[in-house]
Image (cartoon, rainbow, N blue to C red; front, side, top):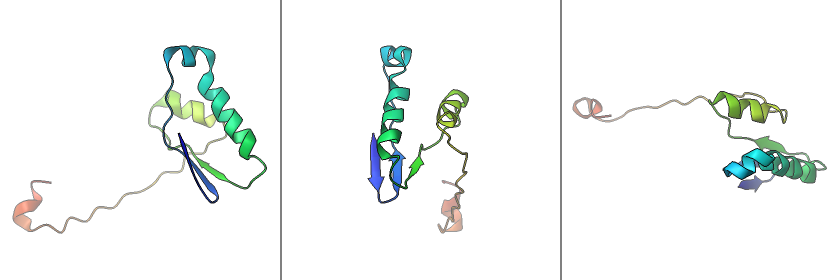
Length: 84
């Protein structure tokens, strides 16, 4: 499942059945999408993974590891902060 937004293409869901994994269906589909979009200047966001095998799979398509940082500010009263 991909979302397209201007120059960005985001891979939101990457799911295979056991048979699909055996036959390399996901690699085929990703390759087909990349080839179809190759004449346009686009960025593909594979949504990454901390699972080594999945990260290696995406790296095979030229993916780079770009970490995103998260900052959370808790403005709850002091007596409620402990519940977070």
